Image (cartoon, rainbow, N blue to C red; front, side, top):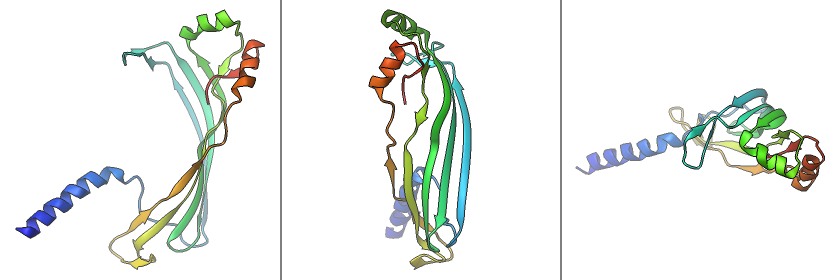
Length: 173
């Protein structure tokens, strides 16, 4: 009876925990270096209003470049730096609902969403595995602590000057 309750509790906990796993528990071999370079183009032509209904008011597109670096520090620790999304190189942003506001303030430049995104630095520590501190050939378990480093953003006082002088300006970062 106790055994059935323990199995049922284990299945229940596993069912709750499964959505939390976003990666495998594999780490890179010691001394191995890996890089990723990404380019992503994204666009959209709908937004949600205050009532949660779709409207076709906004038209946005941007090109983003990013990079990730990983290094096998030991057989059970992989360090990494990820800047993906990285930097919005170019963008266009058109929202006709903002046109009256822009006209009222005399804004004639084009709004953009260019600029850097935050940098993520972390490590993957394999706790249980073939080469991990708790050695096991059947099971792997890893944790991935990390920090997100803000890379600043637009200087909105400067962007306000750009907007009022007719230059392109950053509307959001």
